[in-house]
Image (cartoon, rainbow over all chains, first blue to last red; front, side):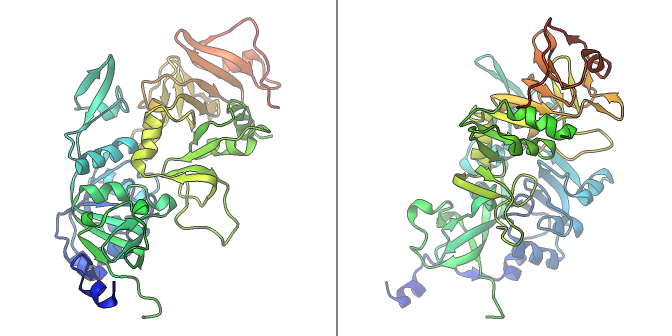
Length: 232
Length: 217
């Protein structure tokens, strides 16, 4: 394939700046954000989102990292009105806003959160898990018995936007991930109506072999332009 | 050896060659430093790694490679990266041989409370509820009392982590095995008497005829 063909290919994603990506996200949007303690979060999109001044977001993510880090920046700027997460212990500001009633927080066991996101993306009506049976997590949820064992019916989660942090993207938007930066990213890429991916590196089509593509390009709506180094 | 390392060393003796093991944040991570000779296990980090290795040298950390506490780690030869759904599939699906977790309270039923203190500490359960519900074996590493108050109690007053009975409790004073009939005192720590354990425990303990001293080597 010649360079002109690459340039003309309809399947090639047009890259967006972080500012343009953030501008797509309206007030009150439901956002799924990848990352675990900030590892694997789409940091440039989050920074740009803070700069837009928009907010009232519902955020679905494993955690809120720490103040000043990753999703913690959205919390610091008070842009989140509702949070669904498994762990907020590392972010005192999240806890403060929750206790002060400034932000609604739904705590969800981590494995259940992963499966609820997966169910949303995979077209399932919910999942049954024994995690949480008989605990405060079970409040208000249906208990379903299967083969003599009790399970909670946990409902699927979907989002207006999935903000994905990836290791590499190719020009089509196929993604792979690095080590523990993978975490929730491949799951949310299935569950967002609009998927914006921020990769550390953008490589020519074919560099990521088919067997190593984790998130296929068809799922990715927008790709963030590469990060400029020394202004280039 | 300090109390925490004594607990970690005793728990390390429960590991079997080839096990897949998840260590909770804090005291449980010390277990990795006490593996008996010849025992090789895979440690899981629930944020997505099988084959967790020790902290890398200063200045050589990989920002994309951390444990569930966010600390820098390495990946051992033969390690595998997985997403969060598979990570918890391993935990709930009966593929995880053992988890070692910290505790706030353990009661006579063998129930564990370890994830919140209402009105004081609401960090969220993270992976704890899945780990206690799904792991093949659940071992709790806990200092026996908190400011003189017993943590091995008749009935947990704090919100439970799971209705699954834990398999073993190891403290700096004793090894206790929850059973259908109550808490069985299995071992006492070196230099600790059965009476000392009973005094530091609110829950009723079942006392077998022979209660050996904790073996650490």
